[in-house]
Length: 468
Image (cartoon, rainbow, N blue to C red; front, top):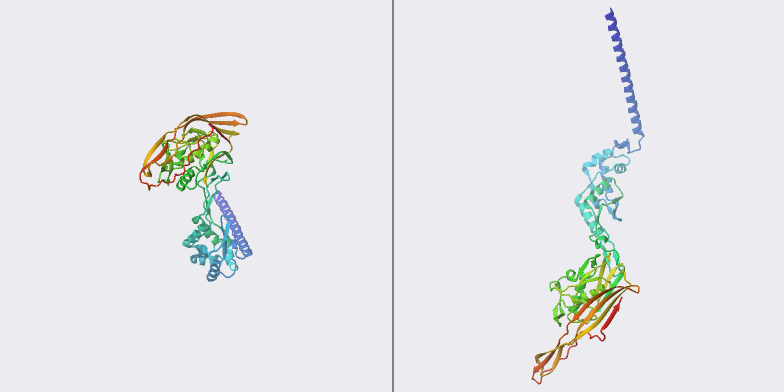
C-alpha cells in the first residue's frame, strides 16, 4: 500500500513538470510571433529603397533592361579627377568603366524600385566593371600631363643661395585602378587618383653646404677673346670647378677635380709654357684657371698645401702670384681650414676669368698680398739661322726676360691687428731671347712683319701689394 502511494505521488510530479514545460513553450512561441510581427511592421515603415540593405522596398521590382539603360547613361556622366591638387573633368567611360552584365540581374533585384541608381550608389553596388586596358591607357595619358620630375637641390652661385630640393610626383597606375572601380560602383562625382612622391637625387643635406651668402675671397684675370681655342680650354677647365664644395678641413686637388687635359676630354691646342719657352700645346690656358683659383683661395685664407710657379712670369697676373699645373706632375692643392664648407664660383666670359670662394664669411677683416724681389738674373740671347729670311735680317721669336728671386707674403688681419703671416719663396729662371737671323742671299727675299709679343711686363718696382 505504501508502494502504491509512492507511485501515485511520482506520477503527480511528472504531470506537474510536463504542464510547466507546456506553458513555457507556449510563451516562447507567442513571443516569437509577436517579434516577427513587429519586424514586419518595421520593414514596412522604412523609407523606399532602404529595407535594411537586405531587401528592396515594397512595389514592383526593377526591370533589368531599365536598369541597364540607366547605368549606361550614367557612364557618360562627368567626374572630377583630382591629381596632386589639380582637377580634370572626365567621363566614367573615358576611365575604362563599363556595364557589368553579369551583375545586372542581381543589382536589379537589390535596387529600390523608385530610385534604383540612388539605392545602388549608396550601397556601392552599381553593376559596373573596369576595363583595365582602357583604364591603363587613360592613366598613361594623365601621367604624361601631370607627372612631374623632382628638382635636385642646387647651389645658385649667382644669387649666393642654396636652393632646396623639390620632390616630384607620379600617378600610381595600379593603385589608382582600384580607386576608380570603387568610386564608379558608388557613382561618386569626385575621384582622387593614387600618387607617389618622387624623391630628388640631390638633397640640401647631401650638398654638404647651407650658407654661401658671403664672398670670402675673389680674384680675376683677363685673356684675349681672339684666341678661340685657348678660350675653349679656359671654359672647359673652369666648368669642372664651378660649384665644387670643399668640406671642412678637406682638401681640393686641381688635377683630381679637373682631370687629365686630353684631346679625348675635348681640350684643344693653344699656347703653353714649356721649358721657359712659349709654344703650342694641348690644353693651353689651363694654368690661367689654376692661377685665378689660387688668387681667390689666397684671399679667402684657404691653406695652400702644394703649388708651383711657372718657369717664367705670366702676363695675366703679378709676378709671384701664379700657380702652374701639369697633369699629373705639378698640382695645386688647397685645404679648407674652417669648421664650415666653402663653395667655388667660377665664371669665364667676355675676356675675364673670375673666381669667388663662397661661404658664411671669413674670420679676417683684411688679407694682404705682398711681394718683395731681392735678386734679378740677366737673360741669355740665342740666335737661330733661317734660310728663308733675307740675309742678315733678324726677327725676335721670343723676347728675353730676367730671372728673379722673390718672397711672397700673406698677412691676415683682425681689425688692425696682424694675426698671421704666411711666407713663400718664389724663383723664376731667366727667359732666353730667341732671335732668327736670315741667311737667304736672294735680293727678292722679303722680311715678314714682326709679330707682336704679349709677355709679362718687367716689374718697375721690386715690391707689390694687393689686399681684400
